[in-house]
Image 1 (cartoon, rainbow, N blue to C red):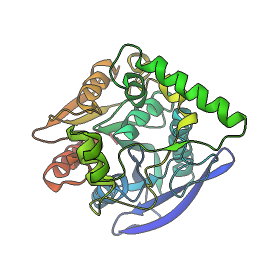
Image 2: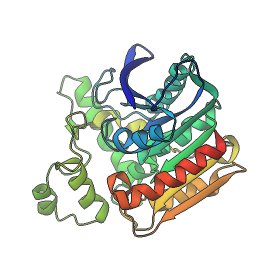
Image 3: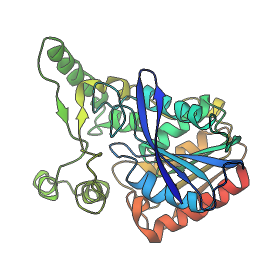
Length: 309
């Protein structure tokens, strides 16, 4: 397997990506390709690249795992921005890059997204039908997560009011508020009294040697979150999402809600060919890097892409 560091454009900046080529690669041949999208707060060196892209490349696919704009090694100002429209545009730009490569079969381009990357991947596939097959692993609808907040009826409005106040302060010269996605350490999580399985596992994955990476610094620009609150990753899936779809979830539910989001995506998708696979005993983060569970997900994805690309 060969791995190359590449760049492609999104508007006025470059998106950083790792392009993997399968063993025995022959530039004179045409290969199917899969874009691999990382979770919210993640980077290409974590699960999307080192687990899913690696295995799919071993199966014979050209893979492209990228850092979201404004994050990781990608360009884009301001930094640490989680903007749904830009995240979705990243996918279209990734397809733009792949179709310029002579060895990529433009009629066999697929996408797999993990966690929030799965929600964004579904949204991108609706309006870019150069994407011929869509796979999601513990897909999460980031807009829903932002709207629910503390699960109170007023959560979304309260969040927007706080964002508005911070944006006004920054417009008047206050330093940007850079907050975190999750607690920065086990100690911080325990002190906050948070014991939900998704938060516990998120801290273990992102803030310990298990998955920690400098390109995933757990930093989030708070004043830029208004668009996320109004975003629905699955809006119009019943009208526009027609490509073959493989949804993968674990059956251990947690605060991020990927189990119910996976079922919602499956139910709402217009796709004639769609399947949902529930990995028994797996939590959200088990499907990031735990071999017992990722092997099942990758076997299912391997079969799915073989049949649809």
